[in-house]
Image (cartoon, rainbow, N blue to C red; front, side, top):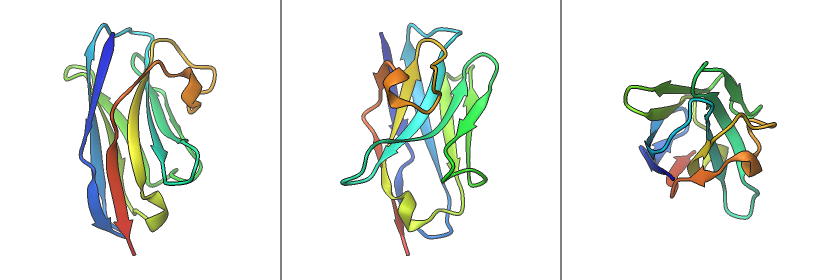
Length: 125
């Protein structure tokens, strides 16, 4: 069993920055992938970024490339999402997710086994 707890959400003006954190606990795997997803009201859940726990390979959604950075601190079992140049369209509930094994699609939500409760990000214009 794996538990995920997100933090760091909040409200910011367009152009601002936020850093989300996801603390991981439980029986983790060296083959795991961590992902950040987001869902805005009335929209489908979207893959934002993911990272492989062992090698640190990263993947990004097209809408956030160049603005968001996913990273990890394995000693703290924490994954981060640094979000810069935020736009109003980035407003959503952001979720951290964990996949035990390499997912076929790193940004595909159905490949992930465990989810956090979410943290809200609101960007005003």
